[in-house]
Image 1 (tube, rainbow, N blue to C red):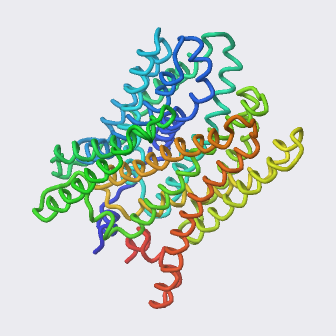
Image 2 (image 1 turned 90 degrees about the horizontal axis):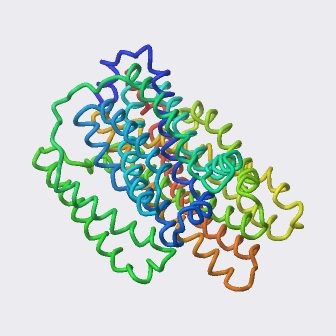
Length: 496
């Protein structure tokens, strides 16, 4: 009997599972939104706290760095201990540190609070996907991951719009503080509902946590991400040596995990996830490559609209809202189609994103300035619809066959790859934008080059997804099956 079949055999659906899902999605939305929502408030923060550009950049990059460092360790702790407890503690910490960010009297205290807030978000995030693994099976799991994937995509896309709306409503020199204060009432309500609705983790005797592995992985991720978050202040040139150092640490981490498995000891991140769990390795690769392009484009659009065209933060956010709308519409539908269409859904979605963003880049480059931003709305909607068919189905296909006792670590590793991809995109794409811009004020040319670089990352994700799709087709033809995706799904495993 397969792992999925064994888990399905003892599964008793919790009648509160759908209400509990919405609690985790709201918390996940807040934590991911805070990666991008602050971008539009940075000028206000800099003026209000008399900070330097390098200091204020840490308000964004410090959060992203702490977020990524915590993910895998937090996922493993959730697997070993109690996901519900860790989720609620992390959510409570996120609320407290959000309030501390809003009340910070100096840039140093704001950066410190953002680091703590990012750490809390990193401990909370892998519990989201692990709780879905725990609460749902079969087709319901696909639907739940569809909602989760929509949350991931939409929270990243609407950050500039939500930030612009808050700044427009909370006018004044201190209006930026409400970017953080808005998390407090929502977070408190989520904590109260979570205490009532979330299920506890069934203890499985896997309580060991590989502390040397935690150190190796943490230092490796830190070494890879630190030059990226420092890119705006010359991090690539000064800290290039951290890239090979980080790679060496991650190689040492992987070797240690293999040794622990060979000895029968529970690793921090089981390497069998990548070698024996169907779809996990490809899905993690597709997610990482896609987020290289996906995450960086929002900062590039904000720079183009606000600095190049003089848009307000709110108007800049409204200009890219069609993408978020398309993503929201498609993600909910894609969650229902993923069992039927499998990787083909991701391939079509990536092609639509490339077409939508590529068309937007050309339109913004050549169309008259007074109509180009609004004429691009249909193309952005197309790109958003494609994104909804990428993020949500890819998360579903990557995690749905992961055994529940590995769910936290698996979700943490998947999101770590996405955070690394996002760090590369948010460092490289604005860097290209400014490099092309130089002293020429050619904002249109800078936008096209930056978006072109984003499309390269998405094209690499498309190539990997297409390879996996064609491999699946050959496998189905060889075995004479109708849909390998369905045959290997938890639903089929339970029936057999």
